[in-house]
Every structure is written in structure tokens, then in C-alpha cells.
Length: 238
Ligand code: SF4
Image (cartoon, rainbow, N blue to C red):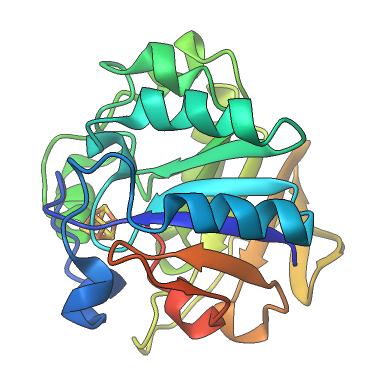
């Protein structure tokens, strides 16, 4: 098994029209933002240890994991109990600058960031507050990867990411939405990662990620305490 997800549920600080978490059964997206320990936390740790899983991702079904009240405490406890495991945050970046201390305690971070343009950001994320990505990268002590939307990725967008110091980008398709995707010309095919093409953009790695062709496997701790390797459910990750 490649990795494990700890999934948070609750109100979000963004309102993406295509948020997959909203399509999940209510139990799987119930609010756990104030809970400590999480439901089934000990059993999840036991299974991660037993299966030798090397990476845990803190992410959301329908919320931003940085809204979790006990983020730092959870991370510290997990590190104490799982000394061989790496920890990764998947967030929309809205709280990154306010929570930089804990942000820098992960091994790496992936931020959902589809555009620098306010109007387009509003359309895609339901808010006009575009996180200051350049400042986040400047203050980050850990590698930051960007998760963007394939259908809205332009050469200018990739150039700007490169300019502020991003070295890895993953391009996603909107789940369940018919869209035309034309990737920027100039991407040079470098290989593939689990069936997904990996390109080079002037030294930046760009993966064209399609959930449907992915062969990744994961163990998931849902907000209601369900522990499941069901890959379909992981599509809800923020
Ligand atoms: S997609 Fe992510 S950031 Fe957007 S509303 Fe859903 S959980 Fe929040």
C-alpha cells in the first residue's frame, strides 16, 4: 500500500462548486475538526504500522485540514508513534501563512492552487481571497507541490509557478465533469508515474494526473472512524 490518508470533514474556508466531498455519504464527511483523538485513531496507527505504510497525508473530504483545531498535537503524536513515517499536508493554503509553524513541521506540502487570477479563483474556489503563494513558498522550509486544474493550466501559469520557486505540479481533472483539456505546448514528456504522464517544464515536473488511470492504493481514515482501503472514497481528497 503506497500511503494513508487522514480525512477531515466539516465547514470549509473555500466553496468550490465541484467539491467532491459534498457528494460523499454524510457520515464520511461529518465534522471532526474539534475532535481529539480522532475516531479510530489508535486502530488506524496500528494498521499503518502493521502494513509498513511510509507516508500519511492529512487532507479533507469537504474541508481544509488546516482548520483542524488539534493539527499540531496530532502531528506531534503521530511522529512519536510512527517514527519511520513521513507526513504530508494537502491543503488549499488559505491558512498557511497564519499556521506556518505547523506547516513547516510536515515533510512536504501539496497546495490546491488553480490560478493567480482573482476572478477565475472566485469561479473555481468560491472566494476572491487568493492565497499569497509566493509568500508561502518564501516562508516554507519544506517542499511545496501545487495541485492545479488541467483544464485551467496555461503556459503563463506554469511560468509564474516556476518563477516563485515551485518545482512540482500535479494537474487534476474535475471528477465527474466533462471538460476539454488542452495542456500548454512546450511540455516535454519525461516518463510516467503509475500510468500518469510526467512532463518537464523548464526544470519543473508536471504530472498530468487522471484518477481513473491511477493505480495508487491507500488506506483511509474517514471522519466517522471508518478505515477503508476503498480507492473510490479517496477521490474526495481536497
Ligand atoms: S474542494 Fe477542497 S477547498 Fe474546495 S470546498 Fe472542497 S474541501 Fe474546500
